[in-house]
Image (cartoon, rainbow, N blue to C red; front, side, top):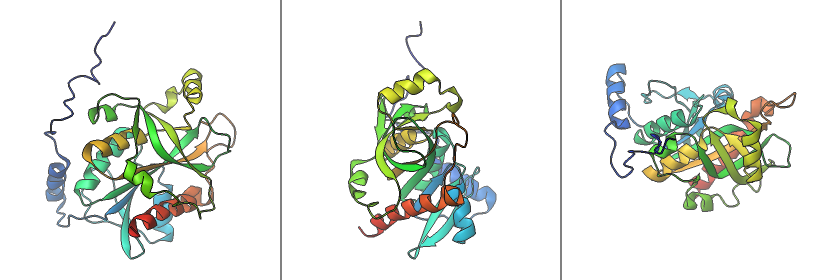
Length: 263
């Protein structure tokens, strides 16, 4: 029997990393001839890419020329006279955190994530939204940032700041707990029933790692789940709403931005 698990061993959470995101981006800017450095202070991760497509088509979002990432493009649009950045197709815990690291050293001050999720413990029919207060750490990335624990959580100050922020929205939105998995196609009936039994509301792929990163790096990250499906266990699943959910999801995120601009 294995007594020690490599993913938990030799992590040295209190030691600095040798490979730093600012150094990678320095070299990327050199190679790409990018002279600009600063990106918008508020950015969005959009794993499905539907919000990104919506702001490109309806809000004239433009490519940000300062973003030096090798793997993604950062678009920006204007809201209340400020620029808001967005990256689409950022799927999975490790990729989301890689981008979060690079966003914050490039000038981001607040990162919002809006991921699709599968329904677990909830009586309301999809689609609806969850403000993720905590997430089960069933992925690998979070263990490189924090010692082992069952959950990682939103920062208490951020949670308090959002009280009442969505009261005027005509949307179904709840606060709740999710299960973050690295392996969506290994969601067996037994494990689904286990998390249902623990009153976990939905399953997604990024939140626990993003919250662990945020706690370890002292960064502002808020994660939402757009519960759109029952893991394709029924016909007609994955319907998100107008513009593939882009209208409602963006409206919710803009309410978050309002709250930060007003305080």
